[in-house]
Image 1 (cartoon, rainbow, N blue to C red):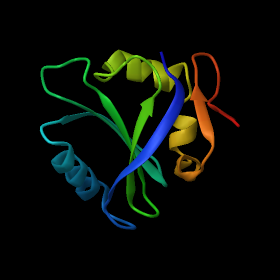
Image 2: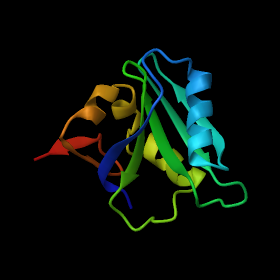
Image 3: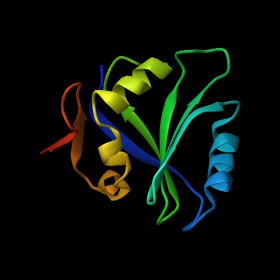
Image 4: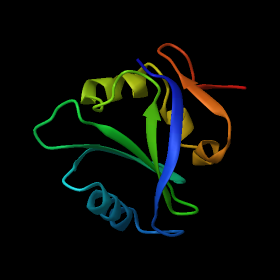
Length: 125
């Protein structure tokens, strides 16, 4: 589980967009999802959304607040239907995902980020 991470720009809400308005725009675009986790930093915002009633449908989105761009965060693993809240907590606690999220400019780079349990995220060529 986890491994190579991808961050794909999916929605632009504009620079300096109010966080509540930005999340509202994301939820409208994602259709019928519920925000189950919200973590805010000065330069970014992470939300974890799920389809109500489906505990393995979670998706991670990160707002780069400076340009006002939402990124869909995914991993090259076998979790094609999404993640559970427990798996998100594992990403946050054991894989230090927030070290990337709090510096969203790293998501805009062409670096290949890898996320593994027990290690800080690392870039590889």
